[in-house]
Image (cartoon, rainbow, N blue to C red; front, side, top):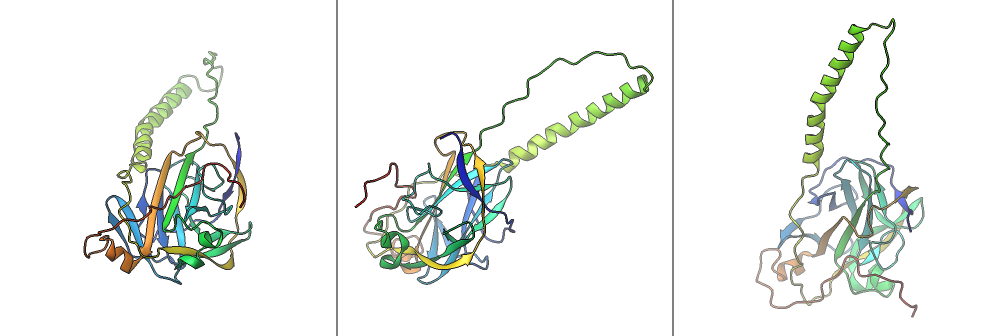
Length: 280
């Protein structure tokens, strides 16, 4: 499908929380008021300590000078459509350098149902028959197709008659020199803005305790609009993941200071879906 209809949020927000940095986007988990949840790095992954009943928001920031499509999943479920998440699905479109807050499961262009940490049976994924990938938030990022280049045509020589002659030529030359001096500076700034972080490593072992999940909370007014976006490739240019669980489980796994883990459990996948399954 050459053109995909995606959601675009209108608001711009100030960065107030530590972010999990990717090459193209930053992803963080914050409270509805913008305060960061406690988090730690372990074996290359970012882990957030949640608590049952606590509401949270996903903060996504575009680090690039181009529009990006960000397909978001929570517990292996697309946050817009509610489908088992796959990078091929719809997502949010971020303008260059834009930052947005995703507050919940999208119910319409006017409302979302709030995200909140909860026990496994109450999680949205479990209540819709998909309790296998709790505890992970994913962002699949796509670049946009570049517009076709403007065909080059040779300059047209003409004789300047009555409009300054040599003076105009000097002004044009001076203007070209100024533009040439500004060019390298602008390129360096853009290159610096795209400095990449370390690649995401494999997930650490997890405890045998029941994992924390994300619930389907109260509906809130959270307007969005639609826009056209053509992906530059079929595969994501980047996938960013953030894992979460309750603090005591993270301690038991050795992610927060505590005894080393002695067990393992199924690793949740941010995008477990591929093709449409048969109904059951």
